Length: 168
Length: 415
Image (cartoon, rainbow over all chains, first blue to last red; front, top):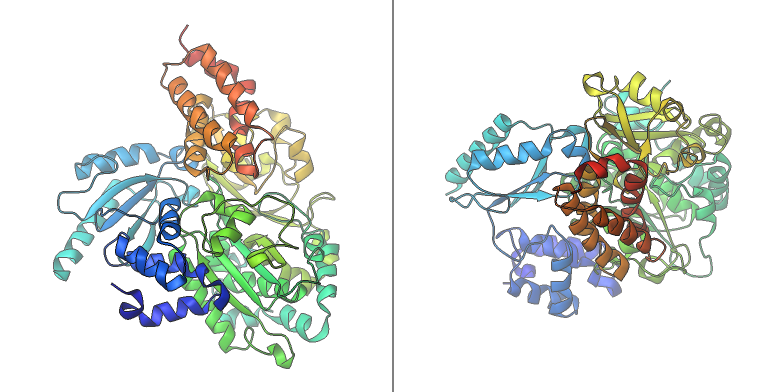
């Protein structure tokens, strides 16, 4: 694959943000682009980005490994990332996560059998006054879901299922 | 009193460029670029007493005056990485009052003669980044950004850059590494960013809230700003209040407001009317304060909070009621720091790993009193041995938790 061929406009926009002699700066936005379709970054994509920016594949892989929003393994189409840090936990985030897993019939880190949702416990998302809350990371980027209940969350799950069916 | 930063609460559509303009928007930028020398802008900010809102409280104007004028080009970077557990103010500012923040960033750029500024947003602020991109484009179209602003020689471009989930990138030199396309690991300082910053060039980095103060200071003058707050901490602050309170949220108040006023008058008190056991005034990085009447009546400013054995930091106030066990609290905070340690300094990388095992064991009831001693020992050994504040701050809740709430640990360890 080649990002320049698949997303010529986006790649150009990204590279224009940084001084030409510092194009390595584009590695993070390019990785988001590479992750868009499959939800994770393939080896081939890392090679492609390394070549584009004149850095080694290892350097690209070290970025993927360091930052928690880049993934090198396939998971559900949507990652439901629940914050369970102190302020959220003081407002019921741990119970929320347990109930959510119970309702979906999976454990934290697992994916629903239809491949749609992976539940993850993540670190603070800067929404401490709106707990319980989570973000969904999927093909359309990252979205916040504040002040959530299990009922509202299961409605969201149904909506995602429906949208997924229609796409297919 | 009218809002200074959270002005969208007074003026609902202030995130629209026409509404912002109608309410005095961009007048300060125009005045600065067309009628003031860059150094004059810095001097007004210096006189206002504005201190950095990211946590360290360093005088903003003084920081700007440190820019190295022998080395070019200059950069300005907005730290929008907001990742401290308990902090959620910058998100509200950028979502609801974006132009005031962007105008402040532009004013800072003019003050240090930078022609490019970057906004480093945490990766989770994905939607917010595209929103800001739209707002930047609107400013360019209206002539408030781009080439030859207001017909002068001065040009400025603002770009957004998304992080990807790493608390450490809120540390300014790790943030710069991240923009450069590297892992977010802090640099050895000195040199400091005003002499060696982004791409090795002189760079000013400030928090979103800091920049958002600047247009109002330029518009109303340093004396107007200084009249609010206290001698030590001028002006107003957005306090992020979370935990066991009835109305958690952001509260814009003058420095010097007491904990009691914030929690009881503004946020409706504690859930179920319970007593407060402890306060963490600076998020997960905070020392734990044992709460009594004297503490509740302490003014929230940098100097006063220090007398309580804690720091105000970014003023992310977490309230713990009497049902919360401190061994559980430090188990939570250490889980966070263990995950977020960047791994560069051994004391932080290994220390947090040890502390996570120990706090986990103690909290689960399988620990001994020796484990508590060992935990305190590990925490104290880490102090003063790390390149950045993450390592240092990770120990704060542990040390003060064990020392100030010994009964909580006695209760859970095996006899």
